[in-house]
Image (cartoon, rainbow, N blue to C red; front, side):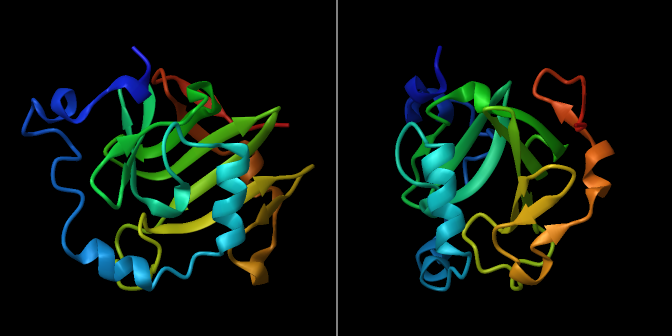
Length: 169
């Protein structure tokens, strides 16, 4: 079954589901303070479109089985239009510290700041969105760190199937 066909009834059958209470009354207030670079979200919408909606309205990214599940500000959930673009994560599936996407051989990493809720003004607590270059990474949000050292080249992620995903050239 494609992720886009999962409906609210199916997801909410289990009251202990990880996303059951992700959307609260503060989401609308937080949305008005979203300072994440609009171009970075537009980039995600262009290269990694959602089955429904826009990354700008995402309030949480989680991994459900081997799929990336995105909870939206209005309480709905969706996935990537092309699910195979999600390749790996760091952290726990219910609260990843990073999500790794891949399009035409190029990786994009979304990093999250979940511990400092007041410091991150993005709905989904996105700290940075980094685009893989040739032996370097470019930050789409933090302009002052726009070229990131190649230290991420040998970073190990967890592939969606649970195996190691080594990020190498």
